[in-house]
Image 1 (cartoon, rainbow, N blue to C red):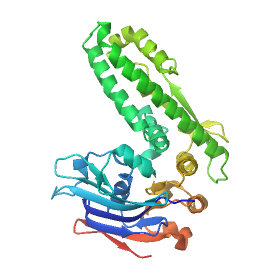
Image 2: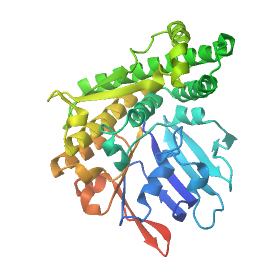
Image 3: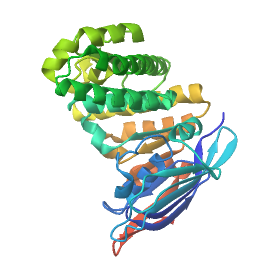
Image 4: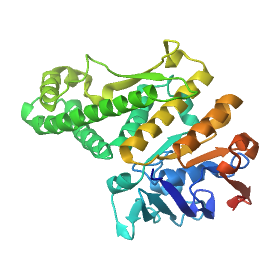
Length: 368
């Protein structure tokens, strides 16, 4: 099986790192050090090797090291599907994020065709008990990992919906203003819905086929306001029919932006939102692993896994099981923790990187 791995990573004026370099042989990478040292900043840099705004969803200028604000650059050598790619990601002061693959300017979608990156960060621990927006984002990240074009469909839909909502707020009642926008929304919205359902199907199959220490999560895509039309034609008709009610609300009340991801702890028949903190964490880990397994079959190589403080709510047995599953999968996981003892079960199966903060600057040192 092919492996997806970052064999070189270099940071320049990125977040707390004035300069940092990590060379790896494809094994999992353990980043350990005190809180605030800059470990998560390394994970954020790796997350930029996938489409989107990264694990913090930050704007390009927010990633620049302060107080210099000179711009920043992240480079990497990516081993992907028996090929080697040199990737440069950077932003000049006040500018947008830019990307080159093998020396040529490239798009985010092009990056998504050679790299797959999944992450689990502490902010996601409240996924099941907070608003639907975070769950939609979580689902769309998983969907994008299978279908990189999902990002473009989402952008097209959001842009057309913003224009339609502007007409609604202005109480524009002339149907001619809405036709083209609703046509764009319908086509993109149907593609979004179909892609999400495909992703959920792949995740369900990956969970059913897995031998894992983590609980299975049954997932369902729910919609407010009576469901989501299946075809673009049906969705366009529903938007036109719903226009009067949308005018009253001043916004679009039907569509994929109203979806929610409902999770259930299968073995207990308990909704994920009602599970304990530890069970909710275990369900999230289970979904990330299922996503990784499905991608291994779909993409041809396991994805890069970014696991920030992953051991926080896992007991020793589940922690050990997680490391075993990562290694069995052959994934290069980048994991953070305050001390190397949290990763003792990995032994020589992982390389260790210490991240420390000295006089406001993060430093990186590799110990094997």
